[in-house]
Length: 201
Image (cartoon, rainbow, N blue to C red; front, side):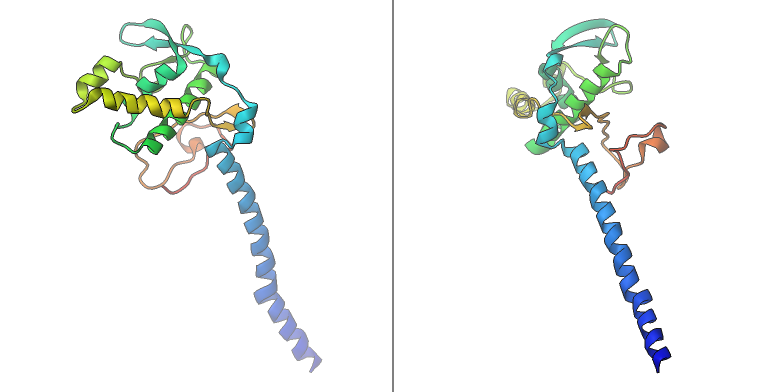
């Protein structure tokens, strides 16, 4: 009879208690990773407040077609980037998210220079897309100034916001298509960023 109880309790432990303990520890570890990723993606206020990008009031922009370098206000530059990277008829929150990512990416590029005489260039194959206001307005239909004002509002409403990890601006690369799931950066470019993980979209 004792053997029956021992087998019964061993069966309960192996089938129910042990898996429950293992699942709990996995959930705890997963939660820690999720919190790290959330911090990297959203740049919680506590992190944002301790990092300032105000030292980057102006940037040096390389125009690749003329090879000229223009000094331009950072947030003015971002209006040209956002209008080049995303359709203006997208929701404001999407445009604001693009502004934050573009600002973060710009500051990352300033701190990790690719060009000798400039902080960033206007070639999307090298840095990120940029379009002059005149060219942008020429390509839009309808109320063109209202559309440009919408872009300016989105940049202004996100002023001061960047994404950081360990109090440092992240390499905030972005894309328009992912096929439903993002790749790990190490599988695309090599190198490793702790804040960038593969995820479904």
